[in-house]
Amino acid sequence: LLLPLSKRCKEFSVDLEKHVAMKKKYLIFDRSINDADSSTIRRITENIIGCVKANIDKKEKEKRDYSQSFIHEILKEVRKGMKSVPDSANYRFNKDYAIDLSLHLCGMAAERFKAMHSAFRKANDPAVYLE
Image 1 (spheres, rainbow, N blue to C red):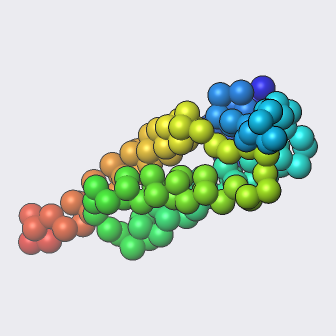
Image 2 (spheres, rainbow, N blue to C red):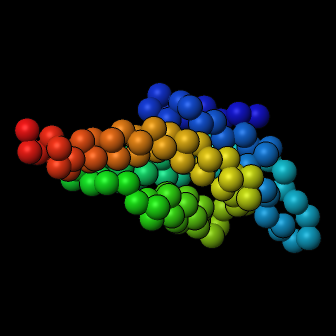
Image 3 (cartoon, rainbow, N blue to C red):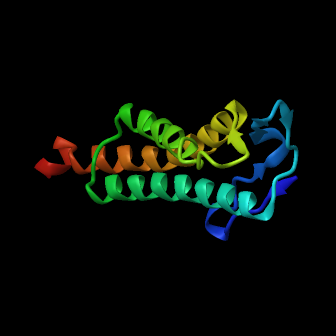
């Protein structure tokens, strides 16, 4: 069952069967995700994607060069978002969610980082400066 996200996050879809594990409650698994849980899952995912995009936007505006630490920041944001699931929730995100969302975000970011690096090199090229 795929959980559709808003249009701004349309490239990534949460697959509830693949990305979400139910918590054990009284030694049994409650296998159903209700509408409130679905809404929370969607909100958390959209928030993670939004935070990563905002962070990249900020770096682009600062006209910074690419750094390997940018990828680590994306991964940290995914972990932080996964930990934001309320303790009272009957579910948790699993490793497949972390991997799939991280790959999606890093793939999206790679193109933007490549453009940032090219713009930075062009702006800081001594040959262009001396002309």
